[in-house]
Picture 1 (cartoon, rainbow, N blue to C red):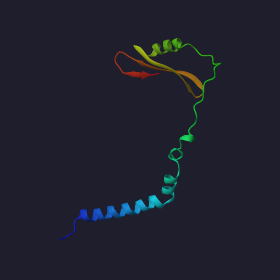
Picture 2 (cartoon, rainbow, N blue to C red):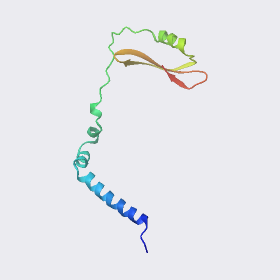
Picture 3 (spheres, rainbow, N blue to C red):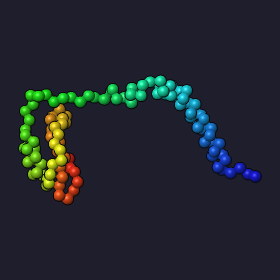
Picture 4 (cartoon, helix red, strand yellow):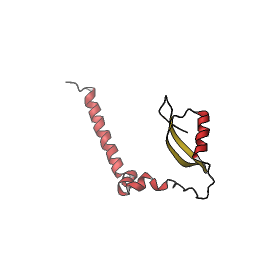
Length: 106
């Protein structure tokens, strides 16, 4: 009886799995990832910390920003207003609803 292609695929899969498994476990990356703390492996400590905005900022009222938004969009209701920093400039981020669409951000 002739051996089918499924037999050879199973054999190839078995040996490739064995070769790759051994290389991952015994190679330098396998040792690095298994012996180090997972939080250090993720690189979370390399992220830039969020800066706080100084208290002596001269800010406009959110009402002024909302009036500017109403000039360009039809605002039905406000979901949230948040003060964020974009390229060093304090900016209001507004999530709002329109009558025909879902939440928008401006």
